[in-house]
Image (cartoon, rainbow, N blue to C red):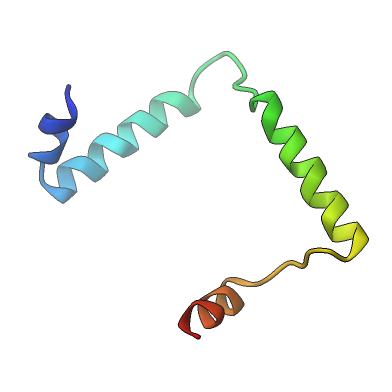
Length: 68
């Protein structure tokens, strides 16, 4: 299946295909581990939060910021 094939599918067909893909991945026997770079990003973000150089925003706060 090519990207063009997917583009020609209806929205419902694309959602159904995506659900089928996720379902097949969820039932895989082997554990899917995140890549190593994920841990590094989390470590960096944690350091920024702990040092006060960053803060956690809710989705509503992010939306409000994007409107200004």
